[in-house]
Image: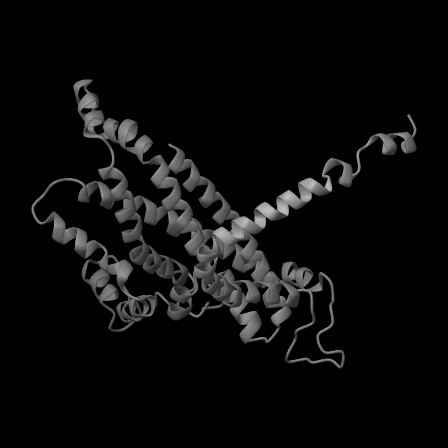
Length: 324
């Protein structure tokens, strides 16, 4: 069969969707909009705010990532499109690859530790004891305190001469000399991760505690009758039942840590010697220190793609949890 004959046999768009059906479709859409116009009017202000605050900066940054935006080195053409040159410069930058590796370690360590501490705290808070209500209220304090306040307190605690952490470690003979935790390249990243874990684990604990309270007591009674030890009950009953909540909490922690900026920046500013320069600080330095907004926008697009990927996983996990 020739191409012309095949094209003749294939129905055209007008044949597949005649005018009567098109009119009926648009008529039904118009009636649907008219019927729900009150709802759309209520949503319109929020949609406008989201568009101005969120969508416009994303679109603008995406365009800037393909333009020449070195403010410190202006050219006569202004901001011409230079294709993928900014993206190539990003991946050719040794600092970007270094910050990517630091970000990966930062995410891996802090998310895992926050989750482990969270589930351990949740199990303890789910156990009846005197004063449990007060302890539950106190546990949430680290998460409720603003990041800057938390960091300023820990800067004093990590101080080389007068910090309480050095003083305690010296008294316990763990250290023989005080350590500049935030100024030493060997300890700065670990100190920043410690603060991140301390501030973030209460959220995981409260979310997982809510999941624990939704588990039927009958499952534990049945496991106890079968002779299961507390540890076996935890592995065979608690963890499988907590899986939907655990996946959501884990993904939320990853998403929040990817875009983390304040804790590391206030504590170390990305130093010393860039050993704590996570991806968000690299973007900040490229844009507001080197004034290369094209490079910063290209790196920002990479961060956006990474965040969107985990957000999609989070949304799928949420739907899966709702369907269970």
